[in-house]
Image (tube, rainbow, N blue to C red; front, top):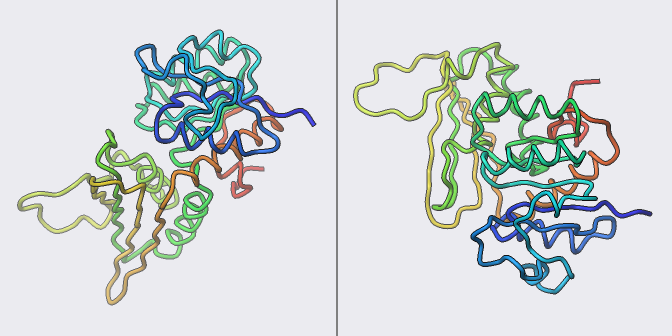
Length: 271
């Protein structure tokens, strides 16, 4: 069996190291390239040293050279970096697993355009458990569509730079779509002062940042006399890495197109 050749962007970061460990421990994947930015102190080092042992792949900032011959690039970096990698992947025919968050609408459109030519799995959270939670939220939203106020509370480590998290926004999008609402019109991001009574059509977001919290998300459906809470808590980044590797395997077996983790896990309503 030919192993799937994986490239990892941002290999020196927290997620990058978890991805390296996952690839190096797998039987059907092989590390093809490890990328870091041009000012990284990790450049030139053996990528395996970041995951406990040498593997013979040197960390580089030369994206085009590194991606030659790769099957899939896994990218959990920043929107600007991901879009630069997207251009190279498009040109070379390399598929992409994208866990980067913080894209605006125009940037997401660029991902969609590229997906007409290469396979892309784009998801705000690669965790299998989180994506099962998305499905549960869809079910709950259908049942609790009237008489329940919806609030999304998320908590992450002090180093996270965007808020709300991409996962929280993804949860909001699932709920809004199920309820026939536009999240950009009904989302409320924090409250302060005299806000007046809560508009029942809104979806509220609250953000916590502190310590080394990997990622906690709770969606609260608050009705009269009861409330339903759906919660996912991540204790290790390994869960995201394992989901991303599962997405890479999925891409290798499917044609060009834009996919999400619901597709990867067989939870999508699409045929």
